[in-house]
Each structure stands twice: as structure tokens, then as C-alpha cells.
Image (tube, rainbow, N blue to C red):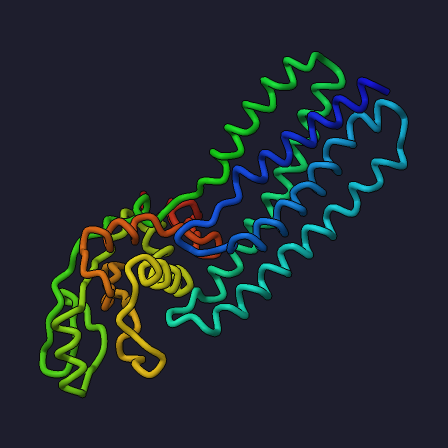
Length: 296
């Protein structure tokens, strides 16, 4: 019983530590402190308990305890639904919305991290039960490093070159380099765009990257993250100042126009390069049969 208790406690401890390490409030401003932290750390504790109990319970022939693992799938699906509803409600009041694709991506990540917590707790608890505690500690440390690595997905800077683009007008038509953005009929609006507007060009590295940038949800995520980090010169009644991204259909390049509060082009480029690539936007035409034939 002492061995069972120690293995379970060690698994729970590493599970909770894992959830804490992958839970952070960054420039996306979610989850908020402290209520979001309390909610997700509590759910992480539940996941850690479920995972830590599994292997020792099987070894002690306590099969009824393992049935609690069946609760995990339902519990974590509810987490995803909770996040989706919360973020969708908050998105209605954002001056620059995240968009449904970004919301779904964040919700999916919160669900997956609870599964990750359960797996690490299961691993550490099992190793501690069948081997020595020192080996379990080493295994837990390696698992924590692996968890941090697995939680880092690709960002826009890995799929496209992000560089400045020249903003100019041809009559009432706004261009970023040679890509037409929109028509602005009001002179006062055009003057504000000339004064504050920053242009960016995103050039995809290959056809896979071109498909990613062609996704409208990915472009909404870029506009949202850029506006959060640099601020946005916009209010509820100035829709003309909403950040806009347009694609060159021939080359796959994407142009962006934004009127930030902080007129720092280098920070804008850095912010865009760090926007996460959404799972829903990932396409791999180069890996398809048609892509292979085209490459040949």
C-alpha cells in the first residue's frame, strides 16, 4: 500500500506541474488571471489523478478504479466546449475578432493538454510503481521537457517570409505594393491611412505555405494578434480602419494593411512571424499525389 500511495502521489505531482508549465497568459490575453488559472489547474489536477491511479490500480487488481478513466474523455470534451463558448462570446466585443478557426484551435489545445497531463501522470506513476523513485523522477523530468516541446507548434515565420510593403494610393484605391486592398472614397480616411498605415507582405516558402496563407481563418488570426500586440487605431464606428489581408491569386503572396497605435514596423513584423499556424489552416498539397506529379 505504501508503494501504491507513493507512486500515485508522484504521478499526480508531475501531472499538476505539467499543467502549470503549459498554462500561461501571454499576448493573446487568455486565460485571464486568476479565475482562468484556477479552472484549468483544477481540471489538470483531475486529469493527473485519473492518470496516476491507472497503472498502480491495475497492478493491485483494483479494476474498478480504472473505470474512472472512462470519465476523462467526456470531461475533456466538456473543457473544449467550455472554451469554445467562452471565446466565442468574448469575440463579439473584440474590435478585431479572432475568428472561429482561431477559437477552435485554442479550444482544441486546451483539451489536448489535459490528455497530455493524464499521460505523463500515468507514465510517472507506472515507472515509480515498477522501478525506483529515482528513475521515476528522471522519467518525469524528461516528460516535462517533452511536453514543452510538443506544445510548440509552427508559427507564420516558419512558412512565409514577412517583410515591409509599400502603402500607396491610386486615386481612391489602396494598394500594398501591387496588391489591391480596398477602395476608400472619403478623403479624411485616406489621409489617416497615409499617416498611420503600415503595410506588410507575406511571401510563402512553398505551395503548402501558400495554402496555409490562403486560409481566411489564418489571416484573421494574423490580424487579431497584430492588433492585440501593437494596439489598433479603430473604434466601433470606424470599420475602415480594421486590419485587412488580401491575397495575390497568381503568386499566393498576402498583403496586410494595419493602422496600429504603436507605429513600430519592426515590432509588427515580429508579431506576425510569431502568430501560430492554425491546425485548421494546415494543408499539404505537395504531399498529395497531384503534388508529386506536379513536382515531377
